[in-house]
Length: 186
Image (tube, rainbow, N blue to C red; front, side, top):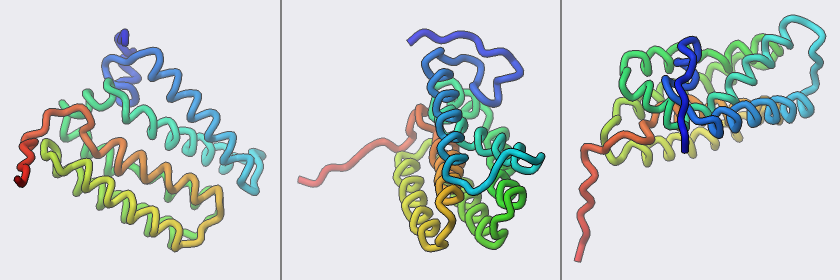
């Protein structure tokens, strides 16, 4: 795959280099996903709160895909402090809930679970168990989301928020694992 140098103002989104395929897939998924969420949600884009909420939803969906890309992963893999800051500033689900009048109690539970899990997963960088732990947290998180009985559109956004922060971002997908030796029993 051919990579190109990303414009500097997009480094935090796509890293320093990115492929056209990864950029296109990210944008298409974010547009298509936002349209699906909008079509399921009982809201219209007739006020500033709804417009900002759907821009944040677009960002959540774009991040789900972009954070799996080699360029974005590599950018944050070399900047551990930036990765921690990125995790910490992800208050999207709280803002979306507030902007579209969803229950803040559920949003706080989703946000807290996701952020704490992402910090734990991030602390396992370089360990062969990192992806497994992230998948475990992700699966328990899905149970949490189902248990909360959220409206369908907010459930969808919450799942993608969790995937974005906890699994696609907190995991170093292309790093060299420090402890990759697997012992086989005979």
